[in-house]
Image (cartoon, rainbow, N blue to C red):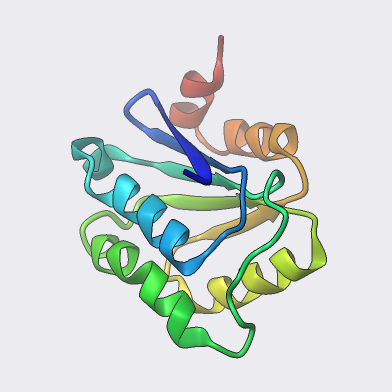
Length: 134
């Protein structure tokens, strides 16, 4: 498996890719996210791509990205309260995320490191703040 998934309480989801991000692995993470009963109460999802060496999506192949998002797109109609956050610095990964951003209907933010993303998330609402406190 090229990723690790962790649920953070009942409101948060964290996935960290450790290998190449492929259409199949992206679809698998989306399925892990959307098929869990906690999905209905989810408020944020962090996808950490900082450990991934790259991706196998072709920049001009929006169909591959859309196919990887199918599960998530459908689920987006069920839970529109999710803030999507990505962690990445690698230029090709940032290009991939730019394409993803053009397709998603949810608020989507990219940070260059996990601590910055968590700080921003904690500042957004009391609900997030309570989840982030030790």
